[in-house]
Length: 231
Image: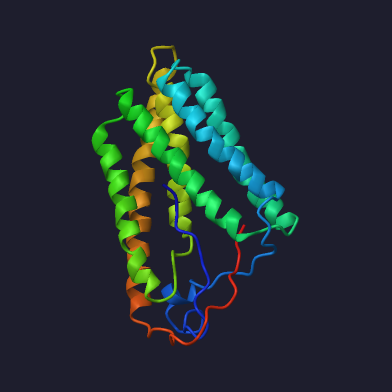
C-alpha cells in the first residue's frame, strides 16, 4: 500500500508543457540503466523477502521485537537502495516498481497481522484497502492517456512514512510491559495522521487523473518514447 509511481507520457502528449500543474507533474526523468540485477534492486528484493518473515513472526511465535527489527531493516534498505541508485547512477524501471510494491506489501501485512492479533480494528483494514481499490480503479482511465500510474506525491510519501512507523509502535504498545502505553499512544497518533494523509493523497491523485483526462489523447500512430526512471 504505497504510492503510484511515475511513468513517462506517450510522445506528443501535452503533459509537461501545459499550464496545468497536475498534468505537468506527470513527466518523469530518464532511467540510468535497464539492468535488473543491481545492488539497489537487490536490496529491494531483499526487502520483499522480509514481508512473509514479518507475518510469520507476528502470527507464529509472536516474536514482536524481532518483527520490529525486520521492519527497521526494511526501512533502512528502503532509504539505502534509493540513495545508492542515485549516487551510482543505477536508477531503473525495476527499482521504481519494486519500491511502492514493497511499501504496499509491508503496510498491508502489518495492518492485517495486527487485526488478526486484535491490536487494530478490522474497519481500519477496510479504510486502507478501500483507498487502494480506488486508486486501482483509475488505472483503466490512465491507460487511455498512455499512463499506467501517477507520480508519487509528497503527501502520499508522508502518509506511507507515518503508517510504517505507526503500526510497529502499536504492536509494541499492545503488551503489558512498563512503558507500553507510550508506544500505544504514539502509534495511534501516527496511525490516525497517516490514514488521513493516505486519503488526502488519494484525493490529490483523483484530481490529477481528472485533469489528465481533460487533455486530448495522444495520436494512436505515435509510439511512446523510452521510459524515464526515478530512484
